[in-house]
Every structure is written in C-alpha cells, then in structure tokens.
Image (cartoon, rainbow, N blue to C red; front, side, top):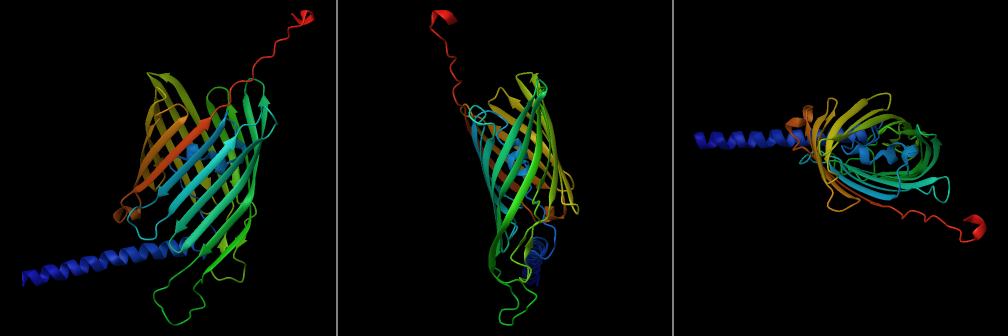
Length: 326
C-alpha cells in the first residue's frame, strides 16, 4: 500500500541521515583524534580579535588593558562537531616596563577529544621612529589533550588499535613578529607549536601530535569613508600539509556598529555583525555558511565575540613651581 511505502521511505531516509552523522563523527575522530601527525589549529571568523594567540608579537601593541572572549559552535547540528572557547587578556605596560604581557587560553571539544592550550605571551615593542612599531613576541605554556572514547562496536571485545581514555600535558611554544604601521596597516608573521610536542607519550595509541603551524596576517583600515571606516584583513595559515586562507572586510559605522563578510578558501562564507553599546565594549556575531561537502548536513557555524578594553588615564604633566624653572 502507499502508506506502507511512505513508512519504508521515511525509515530509509532516517537510516541514511544516521549514516551521514556517523560518517562525520568518524571523520572527526580519524582526522583530529591523533591518528594523523598534523593537526590544524582553530579556525576563527573574528580572527582580527584573536591575533595574540596566533602571533605573540601583537600582545599589548595597542594601548590599554583588553580582555576578549569567543565561543564558536562549528557545523551546527552535526554530532561531534567542534565547539571552541577562547579567552585572551593583554596589557600594554610601556609606561612602567618595556614589555607587554598577555595570557591566552583556548578550549576545543571535538567528538571524544578535549584540548586545552594555556600560554603566557611576552612582547617587546620596538618603536621605529614615525614609521611604526615592531612587536617581537614569544608565547610559553602548555598544551593539554585528552580523550574519553566510547567505541560502538565493539562493546565487549578489546581492540588494541583503538585509542583508550587518557589525558596528558606537554610544553607549547609560539613565536611571532608583528608590525603596526603608522598609516593604519599591519603585517605579522608567526609560528605556533614550535616544539611539536607529542601529548600522551609515544606508547599511547592515539597520542596527540602537535604540528608546527605558520601564519601570515595583514590588514589595512581606510578612514573616513562616509560616516565610518572600512577595515580589511587577511590571514594565511598552513601546517605544511594543509593550507587555509581567510579574507574579510567590514564597515565600521561611527564606532557604533559594524557589518562585513568573510571568505574562507574552499570552506565557508561568513556574515559578520557587531555592536558597540558603550565605549570600549564590542559585541560581535558571525554566521558561517559551509561551501564544502559538509554543507549537505551542517546548519552553519555560529560564533560570538565580546571584547572590552580599559584605558589608563594619561600621566599628568609635572610642573615645577620653583622660580629657577619658570
């Protein structure tokens, strides 16, 4: 009968969707769970607010004390897809010492895997006349990786080729150079995971291997275009196996709101929106639309960003009252 045929078709469709979901989880596990030697770093649409974790030379190069947090729900509705959280705090300490300081924390959950990176960033700002400022930075910290897999099947038999539950910590080291030009542009080059640490030990099946990554970033702001400014940014990243590039532009209207677009090569197109409700506070949101094979099962990617800066009052000019110094 037609009713029975409809039930059968729905059952087949549900089975097909379940297979796609299981396939996606399997891909995450194979590509990110430590079986391969190269691990691609996080992908952030609002990367212009996350420069410090990619390039420690940028730490504190702008005035003030700033805190930035982000949350990214990648490939919404895909079971086991990445969920990431970031917290960066940086301070320009040039009025006291010639070193800028920052702390960067990153958490990532993908399938069975959990990764945490914590880095202390130090940057030495070198003022080169009126041309601009060069930040020379290093990030020293740790990378923690762990997994708690629940393999189905098998449920009873022991398969020695499947990773088991573990959690481990190892050294992490970053280095970067960041140039902030006087004409509203910037250029940065950096490398992360210089130590290429193995987390979990060589004897652990499924150990996490941090791969060295290389970054090239740049951008320019075009001032006074109507009631606002146009900001452009480019980020190139590679682990010498995979390559990714982000290109974006956003219009910042009267320092009150912004809107823009991002294109990630062979991956996604994103819409960015932001609002500055009070001075020094920025709230941003982006929605990524997948343009790769995951577009058939992903409901897009959501990203939320909040940044707040506190600017110290200027140092008062000391005036002498002595007649000799009038």
